[in-house]
Image (cartoon, rainbow, N blue to C red; front, side, top):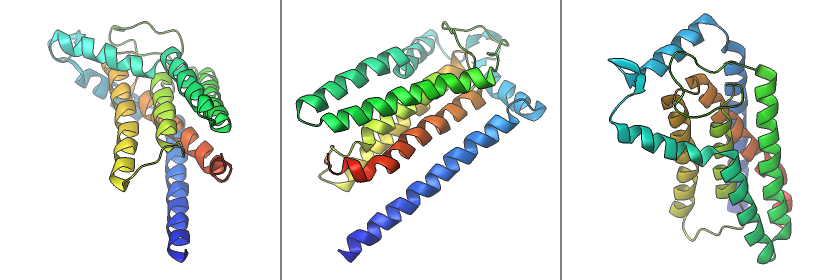
Length: 223
């Protein structure tokens, strides 16, 4: 029992440290986003993903562009909203109604938070290269990066998932990090976001998912 309490305390401290890193990482980016040095770094990284002979084209053969457009769909609010309803419906059907409600609240509030951040910062989209996909909102933070980080980490942290081995838990947490990273890369590759936009989006999405989990965990364990 004492060992269990020690492990629980260690996990709690780790979560608090990670929350602090994500929070201050976002604040730092938000503070520096309009400075010349960040603009220079953003431009350099954006051009690094372009064809050296024609910046209107992304790096690599044509299939890379098609792959990036497919990957970027994994951060779509419409797609993630649909799968959130599907997962919540499944949880409700197996008698986990409170857990389903928690999951929907986390996803919905996170998406609203994303729109509010975009509205507050109103950073223009990159105009240095053509946009390879349609965009309708401002640039900072990346909504696709934030929503994918929010959704996939929230899924991985659902206490209803029972992992027979610790390696299985690590696997799903790894997936929950890898997919948003790929989505973030695709947004820069497609020319619709600055690198700092997607990094900030990842920080905000992971932060919101982890914060909600930490705050709700004592109640979720009784679901």
